[in-house]
Image (cartoon, rainbow, N blue to C red; front, top):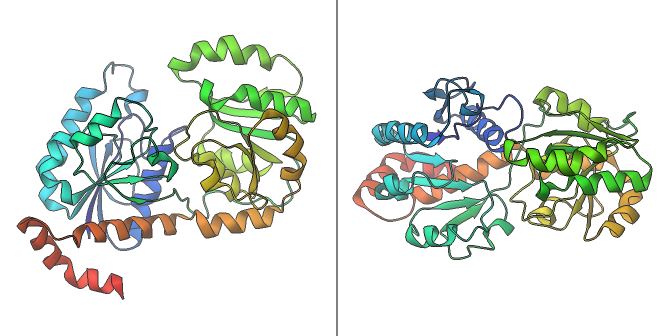
Length: 364
């Protein structure tokens, strides 16, 4: 199959530091290539991929000090994708909804993964107006605010099994918080839980410009007390050590988290998760196996010892079963093939006829 992957331009693929969407695009793209598909990646020029790379900007927009408005660069990228669209069987978008108007005439050959939160009221009329654009959710809970949108599947994220090594006998006597400092991620809860338990907490997280005031006014004063270490943003190489040595990952969110990549990153290291019941959490954490789900701070503090007692080998085994990149890629290939099998326009029928041998092979 000839597949186009259209990535965000804010970060490279994979990202140098933080960037969940770009990381998933990287894992998916490389795995599709490994499976034998002809894949082209539209991304920033500093991206590294096993696929054919079409650079749409010289470098990640977040790292370019001259960039003030990202929209012109997305318009140029989409024009380039449109020029080459006939070269592909499927165009897989990871850029929110920028492409909807331009690619609506070929909606049947597109799929869009909704990586972000979908509970914003401005999105509802958009999905009504473009109800023919096929969507993939990254959790079932992500669909709740827009149940009438054209979702064709839910595909949970997956990671390469070798990207994060398990640690079954950690020596770091600390709890971990990983990701982003923001009000909805609730690092303040993580600090309170750690202090109540008398266990040190290490925070490896980025601070976006929009969250700088929250960090300085709310979180920074809490770092002055004992037992809390703020590390800052870490890269992928540092995650194995950071998560693998931790006794548990704290995921005390207070928003409808679409997925929560750090949860499965911790599981890949054998590290159990203490998470609050929001968004996708009940779909990701297997209670009593890979972690514990709580509803209140009192419950979180009370249940932490049970989290710490979970078997780390079982945590890793469940990760391998549920959240591998191989499973994720196969799920997406199933989505691509199901879209191509749908009866529709003459153009789609011609594509299906050309791919029929491969489709039949995939069904056997």
